[in-house]
Length: 597
Image (cartoon, rainbow, N blue to C red; front, side):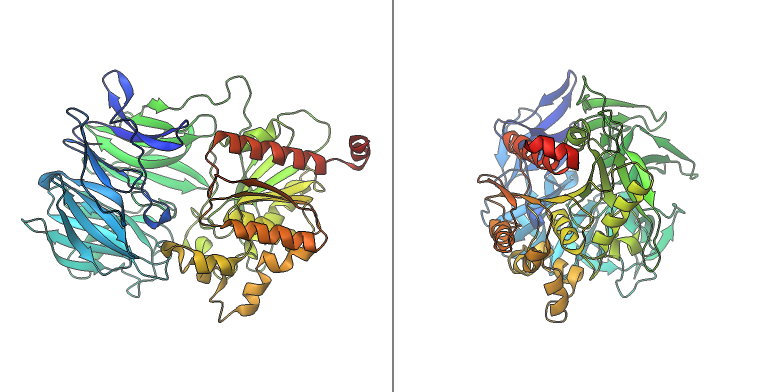
């Protein structure tokens, strides 16, 4: 958002890429040249590929170069010609008619500035990773977040502050450690200025909460008394925004409560009002000319761009938000909590969906382990969940220990215990739902994508609880993944499992490939031939090992797909094959006889 207008990115299903849209006087319209796909690949996950300015909009194109698209005539000008580099985390600097960005090249990152003439300047370097640059309203101060290998940004990171000189360079750059964590045992994210006051989200007291920071010396940190809830989720991407000043000391903030994202408007006197209550997750909060805009996700709508009046709290949809199933009654998420079971376990939360087909019998259950694993499931529309529910299956998405949105201690509980406590929590969820008669405990399936596929495989190895399992481009050999993973996650597996030199036995025990003979129940696998994260050989080797042990796993291969299937035909095929697999293995004994006859 800027004085030039309101812009956003929207998926073009035909091209399988993100394209630029603008809010015009006539409503939403495509903006910029065609074709102009927009996407950042910094850190592998991108983010911050769009920044509006007074003259138009800066974007990171599919080729990873920055372009400026003029509001006046739509002319697209390439500002960088740097084929070995990638850019992301864009922030417009209108005072100097330039854009700030995170530049990644040759396994190094920098904060840079690029003018409309294409002149590039390094503002700061020397840290392993950069994120979230934020300019003060007068353009004289710049804040950002950095972190060092082997950490992930949700484990340990630092807030930095610098003065912007008259010629646009940075001076007096220094880090500002949170008050109780001078040893840096805290994660900070999303710095933002409200006038001349710097705010940031920090979890040094156990939750990502808003703090005002005095930039002098080591910095004085002041809490505004926000509740003990996470006000953001794990920063996998650049350019996240879960809090936003809306004028006169007021704020819009996202707050995660039992897995659901809530949007709150907060006055200078700390009076609070929850708005847009139909929605269960919010991202990319921005203001323009007195209106709050955000991306909102709902259980009954497609993703929407909302415009919200900060005074009245009333919202209206300016783009998206359509009914995805106009002829069918959608299954709605039921918030569930599985109580702790003793020892070091915690209560865990999830979302349960009942089948839409009437039956006198308790339905079979599909348990879904989300990816990440430092991520979460949200109560938002998921076409795959709806597909299963319309065909007689109950579905549960589980926020196992290690999920984000439940505080720092819960998020870090997975350290060294991946493939152990996530599996325990999935089993606990299945037992809990079966104990209330909500599902047939003898017909429980488990599936997951990427790291969720790893959890599903470990569950099939460690437990006889599940009738069958599905791995969608899931990790089968963590050590091989460690050797090939990109720089952003280079230390992540060591955090999840411990360093392999220090814990060789643990790595062996938690490698599905080495225990293929222990999987006694049926498995189905899906793999993209172009996957750069979970390389195809991981799935090939697992399937071969299961066959060598006497198993009969199903494998469905998609030559042109990568990590996550984008083509509509691939997604449809994956659902249909999985449904056939689950239907076949969910038959009861008497039904099975008839099915086979």
